[in-house]
Length: 339
Length: 116
Image (cartoon, rainbow over all chains, first blue to last red; front, side):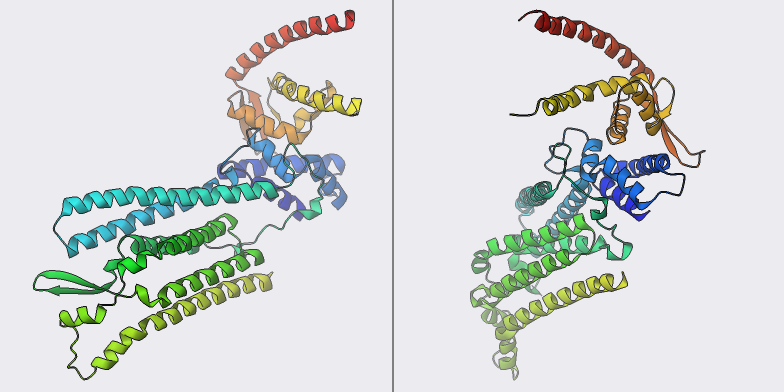
């Protein structure tokens, strides 16, 4: 019977992954044994099933008994696997991001390798600690919220009906793990660039054996926006953590996704639209490097591309945000209408 | 004022919690699966609901007091538990302690009943 599956799912979902299969089998055997006692094999009525499940108690309470009495966690077993997955992704992307930046810096300015390397090691440590702290704080908060909302632990049994058991999510509504992983990697790389090496974003030039970069952004002015960047990164990682934990599409998750996407897009547009962050000397530096000449016919149109670029970027951010929201909504729509 | 019976029941279930361990260990010299253990214990006056017994058996297995084996020959696969050599030793030690406890508690409660 389907309600039995839902019960077993509700219990095992709250247990560490490596125990789930064994407990699932044992629990199914137990429920079948208990049913057989009430009615001959295969004849159990809906009432029989409900009375067996009620006797076993609230799935949260049964899961708590399986976990043992020591039930104080910062991050509980039902979320530990998601936590470790997220942590690995975040730390690896930080490592890769910083290593790539380090390599680029070495190529741009080959002198002072030792000094660069010390900087690299220090930033590896500090960014790693930041990433670790953010992910842990986010998961601990989610765990705390879940615990506050969870009705019926071993100590405070709550009246419940088997009919209230939530549906087992089907395959189609599952979020592919590659989705949030890609988003986290992108978020971390983006943050690493913004925080450590925003001056590397620009036009690269190799001239007479010397590499120079003409930055798009004014690193000092941009620095004022770093708290916004940190906020965006935390919000983005929070969203992906929730997706990794939930692993299933739902209306609530979609609403949250849309809110976070809009908030991030708006914040990004505000930063991009501020003319102060753009390198004020860009055109002059381009001319000095010989990449632009006021004598050229198309000089004015080339300059206007630069002055209008920020507007285009704002449009681009809005466009990507809209595409993301539409594609997520469409995926949820498909789940809803195939059920 | 709290109800006397209710309070007794609450305290009693706390007391029982520990004794169920000894009860379960005592019946596992032969392999049993969880649900076959319930009537055995009940018959001897130790009522335990499966929702408590099943997690307990797993815990005892994890503490290496019990060994387990899945029997898949029957129509319904069942997990059988049996005392491990270590569990046997622990059980015997627990029984000795339990008897001492009975004697001490006997003396304590007799004092109350006999005295004021």
